[in-house]
Image 1: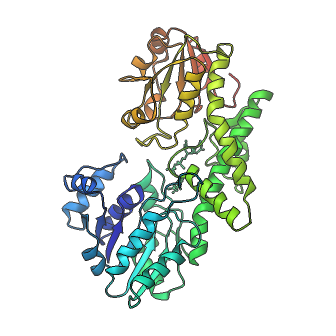
Image 2: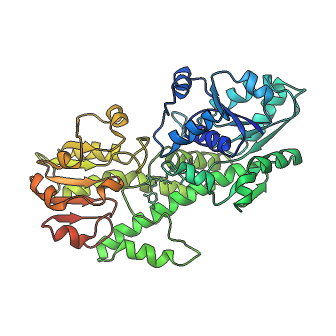
Image 3: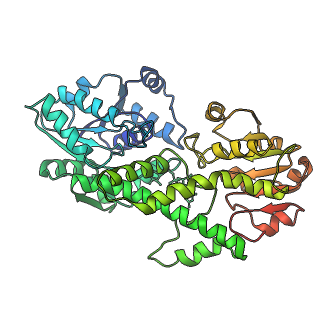
Length: 435
Ligand code: UGA
């Protein structure tokens, strides 16, 4: 199977490399010449565990190549995936589809034999219809089917998620397209990952509904955490107690500083816009966004509460800045509003993140970046665990206490047991648990 992947962001590069690993012939195309030059040198533009190895193996095997030009690869491909960005449009929160439509027009001009054009980017309902209209307008003779195949991979676990999906969703009414998509995913098929064929609009909405539901689950447990703190209950036990009910499930019930990243915030905003446009508002999702926004600054007030409400003259050390571990991605990370709110409360900020400090520099001002957790903790009045990187899970608490000016740990990810931290003489605050 010959595949062109348009866009070498997270989804494009991971999907392209995994398809090549299945044995398909894949060319990843991106307009950004620096990115393609870097990929030719074997440099991966994003931090994703094992992606470098997967790319290198498949490049060496001759199954994976890169280019800035899509004309030639498209003309020779059985399938062309669109995996370009769909950022929030400035001003109104709708998804910006200009990259998707530009790709569609360029693909149209170069189609030869029967080709399936498949959107992998997260796109609002009806985008597939518009992609098809644009292609047919630009190239009325093209033998083409347009399908939707949303991606459910998580950053930091992207390759695993791609190769061991809970399901594959493919939206198309075209029988030839269904056969071709089934063929592309055959290795997963054989591993019994269910492939769900459905309509194109349904597939597009499945993606948004899935992300909105997960964001709702997180936000729900975050509010329960706040209540648990007030009434002296333990949110982790509550999450387990409800999650063991199969109808609820234990995943995505970790209370924390609020969700962030390049997907949940953008996709929930886009979903409420679509829903408003169709006069079928999703009020639960509107509430989720509002609650999540408030939460990030509320976490700063939680830190300040330890010191009577003000952080003037205090140094706060943050461990973890990225929106989750195993990524260098700072997009919509809860750490960004948290840092500003801590600064507004008077704090001086030190921070350490294993991968995210370069990106953090362009997002955050007046932060001193440190080389490791202990340097970060040195002379700090409070240590705040913001992202649950593995390396923060077994810190030497006695050493931390010696380094810090004041023994206070605020654990926004609940990665320690309260008794083990207080046992070392710390004041310990976490999320939704008795301290
Ligand atoms: C998310 C979805 O999980 C993927 O299925 C989807 O494909 C992807 O968006 C996308 O649309 O491309 P991702 O944003 O990489 O993936 O990260 P998640 O692991 O879902 O975490 C998102 C945020 O929720 C993080 O800030 C994380 O800390 C937070 N979270 C997650 C919690 O606070 N609690 C949880 O229990 C789980």
